[in-house]
Amino acid sequence: MGGDLGGYFNIYYESTPFIFKGKTIRIKNGLRLVSPIRYRNQASVSTDGGPFVNYGNPWFEKDLGGNPGRH
Image (cartoon, rainbow, N blue to C red):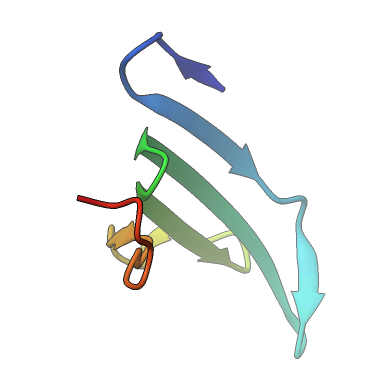
């Protein structure tokens, strides 16, 4: 985990290998938190010791619809 006050916060983690349907799977993930309502998820997966494959880098934003405090 790393970050700076008033800026980005990054959280990185890796799973231990696990078996699913006879395949050994490993997952790496990185979250980039840029505000209380917006973040990016960077996930990659390795199967049977192969290279990690990127599953995209989507941005997510919390829907604040109906919140009277939002301007």
